[in-house]
Length: 105
Figure (spheres, rainbow, N blue to C red):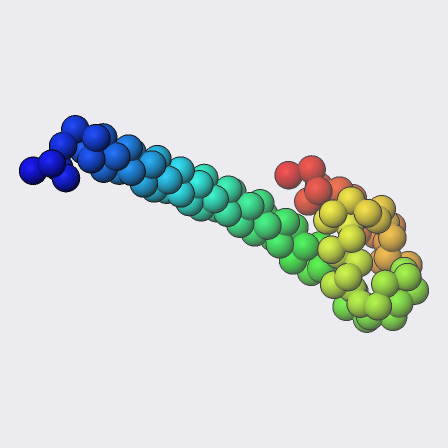
């Protein structure tokens, strides 16, 4: 009975509190991580929709006159704001207005 005295019970209880707080911290971190992952995934899918819509407007020649290897690379750069909407040398002025509408959404 001496080994289960008050001191032993306090140590057991203190160990349980540490484990519980570690579990709650891990669980809270996991919940936060999954929420942030969901938010980032929705933002990426929104950006991917923009890229796909911009790519549909581009001529798909992959000529490289804009400075990018492919029309897809140009569409990504336009969607991210690194390039102007009229950057395509083949169809830039014709499609610039439509691309600006896509970017405003």
